Image (cartoon, rainbow, N blue to C red; front, side, top):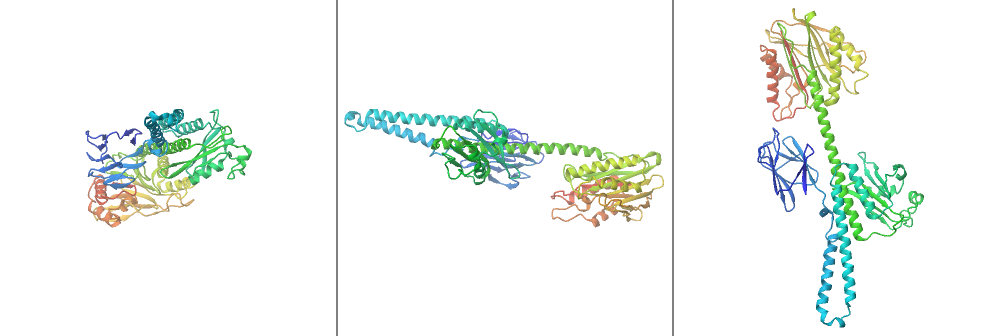
Length: 565
C-alpha cells in the first residue's frame, strides 16, 4: 500500500480510493496553512496508479516543484500544497518484485500438473492395468509436485517475513542488518557484506557478517572480493559463480587466491528507480553448486526490496536533516530578532524608527540606535554583510557585539570603523565584507558627525527646502583592506530635518517584471513624505515596496532607519 510521509514524520496510508487535502474539517488530511485552500487537492487511486488532482486551489498544487492539474504519482515524488511539503512513497510489497512466470507461476504450473495427473487417473481408472503409467509412478509425481509447492510456499512465507522486517524501520543500519542476516540465513553463506555508494560517488562497505552472526572486522573484509562487488554495483548486473577459484573471470584475483574462496559466490545489485545504490555480496566455502531458479528469484526479490527500503531510509534521514536545519534557522532568527531593536529611545526633540525584513529566515542586514544620556548624544548605525543566511547572520552578530562594546567604551565615532576593520580582517570569511554607516548627533544642537564604510549613502533631507544631501565621507567596506583609514564627515540637522538610512535591498527591490525600485523613485518618495514623522516615513516606504514587488520573490534583505529632529 502506498502512503504519504508528512513533514512531522507521520505516515498517512492511502487506504481510501479518494483522499482529500485542504484546510476544512471535512478533508481526510487537514492542513493548517495560510496558503492552502479549503479543498485544495485530492489523491485518487485509479487502475494504473495513484493520481493527484488540483481542486482549483488559489496557490496551486506542485509535484517536484512543478505546478500540476493532474499528475500520476511515482515513488518519492515531492508534493507541495501551500507551503506544506510531503512525500508520496510506495510501501515495499512482494507483489512488486515477483514475476508471475517465476515463484507465483510455479504454483499455477504445479497445480495444473497435479490436476492433469488426477484427470488421467480418473480416465484410466477402469483400465489401469493396461495403462503405461502405473499408480505408483503417478503418486510419486504427485508427491514431487506437492514437495515443490511446499518449498515455494516456504520461500514466499520467508520473503513476506523479510519484507515485514525491512518495512518496519526507517533506520539504515537496521535495514542493512536485517537484509544481510536474512540473505546469509537463506543461502547458508559463510560470509557477506553490503557495499553502498556515498555522497561522493565512492563505494563503501556498510555492513559485514560471518556465519556465526557476529560483526566482522571491516578491515578483514575490505579486500575479500571487493572487486566483484564494485563491478556489480557499477554495472547493475548480478554475478553468480559455482566455483570462484576455477572461474576464469576471478581465478587470478588476489582476494580470491589469498582468501581461498573456492566455492559459490552470489553478488546482486541494489537498484532503486533505475539508480544503482550498491551491491550485496555472499560467498560460501561449505555449499558448492549453483542456485536454482527459485533461490535466485528469492534473492533478487530480497535485493530489490532492500534497495527500496534503503532509499526510503535515506529519504527519511534527509528529511530529518532538513527539519533540523529549519529548527536551527528558527533559533538563529530569534537570536537576530533580539539583536535588532524592537523599540527606540524616547528622546525629546528627536524621532527614531527603523525596520528590517530578511529575505530568508535570517539575514545580513543590521541597524541599531544608542542613546548616550550623559553626553547628550544619539548614535545610530546601519550595516549590510555580503552574502545571506547563516554565514551573514554570524558576521552580523560579531559586528553588533563590537559596535556595542566600542560605543559603551566611549570610543569616538570617527575611530570605530577603523578598529572594527582591523579586528575582523583576519577572522571574516574569505570574500565577505561589511558596508556600514555610523553617525553621532548632538541632541541639543543637531550637529552630527559620521563615517561611511562603502555603504549606500544615507540621505539628509532638509524639509523646508526639500533638498537632499548624500552622506558619503568615509572609506572602503570593512574587512577588505588592512589598516584602512576612514574620513569623518559633518553636518547639522535643523528642525524637521531627517537622516534616512537604508540597505541596497530597498533600491534593488524587484517587481514581477524584474525591474528595480531604484534611486530616483526612492528620492521622489522621500521628498513627498519629508513632513511626515520618522515612523510614518518607514511604514509608508515598506508599504510602497510591498505594492511594487507584488507577485515577485524578495531577493535581498530590506532595512531602513529614519532619524528626525
